[in-house]
Length: 333
Image (cartoon, rainbow, N blue to C red; front, side):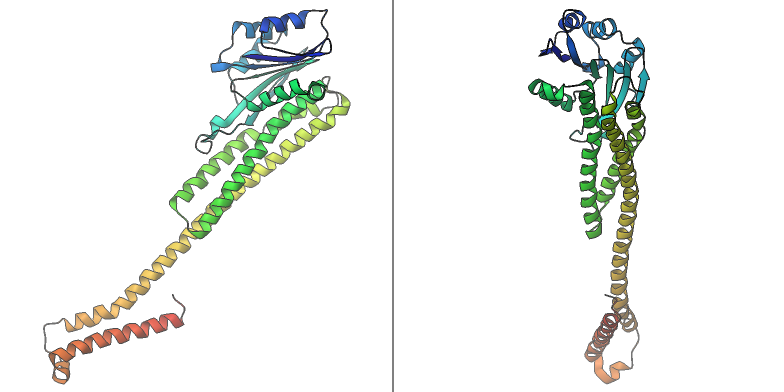
């Protein structure tokens, strides 16, 4: 699916027909100041019209077009004679992203040259739709320059990491409270799922800086010098995200240690309780074992058969009470 927006003789035009876009772009009588074309490759398939637009109209290299068809989830920047091809990655969270986080990672391919930007992706990206709608509503602001348009796209991609980190922080705070209050097996499963998400983010985020650093160079032919500071900001934001992800991975390890410590404390409390119970019951077993022998005890001559029963029960109760007082004094329970 093709969507295009561009200035034609000073007027903003939106177009979905590839042939019409090609005609306007090749027409020497039209003055196209800035062209943005967004191509959504549905089902990882490219149509004949989309192929002609990329290869015949803009003369993009076939290897660059092939990279769009088969995302590698590894960032790259390739410089050609009339354009620069790049691949960057962001995160668009899906409902069950904790279980299948890899499905939330998308690759955005772009071709950028003098006066044009072509974005290609295999997934529906909602932030691009938002940027397109803003460009139609406020073209003088959103489409005032190639640098401004490219910066807005990059900023949305990098900001997706911040949004994901906020979700992770909320989840980790909740897990920490649950672990400290009453650790359960489900908590460990959630911690491991969070660890998987953080490590997946770290795997793609660490290498993203290589793509953005190209647009911070002073000898760049695409970016005007006064706009370099904006792309340095993108690069700095990406570096900050990398540090934040590394910090979250360390926090996950600490959270696992907290969980194990909480489980150990909980187990210790249970063992202490069982030990106290066993110790309290021990005199009962000893006395009952003693009077359970099939012999005549001397106590029978003093208390009689019925009185001996009360005597044995009394010994048990006194022993239990004494032990409870002793345990309480030692603060063992």
